[in-house]
Image (cartoon, rainbow, N blue to C red; front, top):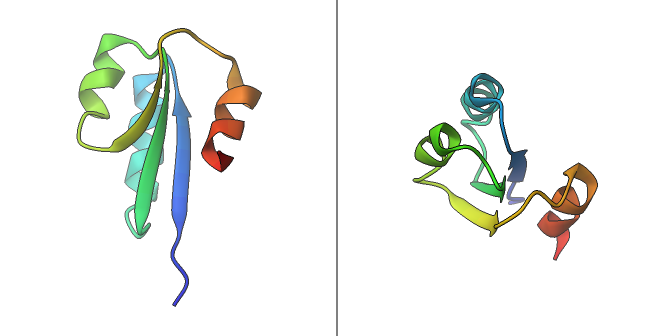
Length: 68
C-alpha cells in the first residue's frame, strides 16, 4: 500500500491554510513548512508535524525542504 505525504508551506494567509487542510483529510501524513508564519497560523498548525523556519526562506526553498 502506498502512503501519501502532503506538504503545505505556510506564511501569512490563514484562510488559505484552513482551506488546504480541509482538502487533505485523506492524507496519511501532513507535513507543514512553517515559513515564519503569523501567530494565527501557528495556532492553526500546532497539532501537525512541521518544519519551522525562523525567517521566511521564500516559497521554492520551503517546498524543497519537503524533500530533505
